[in-house]
Length: 75
Image (cartoon, rainbow, N blue to C red; front, side, top):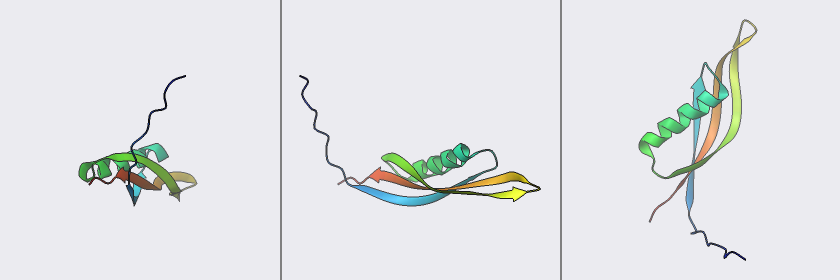
């Protein structure tokens, strides 16, 4: 039977961001994560908290996606 590998215990911090896009929900998430990556090390995961958007002339015009981003705190 294979040995279980022990995962190191981490402490994570969460921040909340809202990405926007005229293309798609996924693009809005990608934009938020890419922006966070510029200033935050150790990004590990995200969770979609809310999805909303603008409607213009009966069509989706603009997506707004709020996410929580988790990153490992070092030290």
